[in-house]
Amino acid sequence: MNLTNDPKNLIGGFIAGAAVGIAIGMLLAPNDGKKTRQQIVDGSVKLKDNLVGTVNESIEKLKDQFNTKIDQIAKEGKQKAADYTSEKIKV
Image (cartoon, rainbow, N blue to C red; front, side):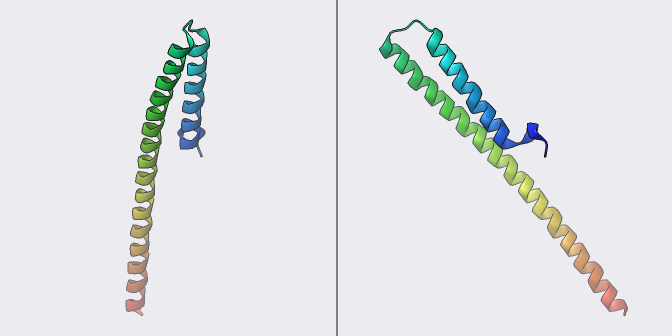
């Protein structure tokens, strides 16, 4: 499996990058406690929204891949059944 296309790696990298970015931003910003807490809340909401979007996109891609594979297997099964039936009729 190609690691660059693995949804787990994508989601994990996204979460790690967002968390590091938020943490660095909070540490470097010279704000009072109330404002910093509000920024953390706002950043967390953005992170959640982005994460939900990323997860939903990954789920849709996996559904598409699954359905494509199921269609392929069904088509192959129908063809094998047709081939088997035509061989039995010849005998």
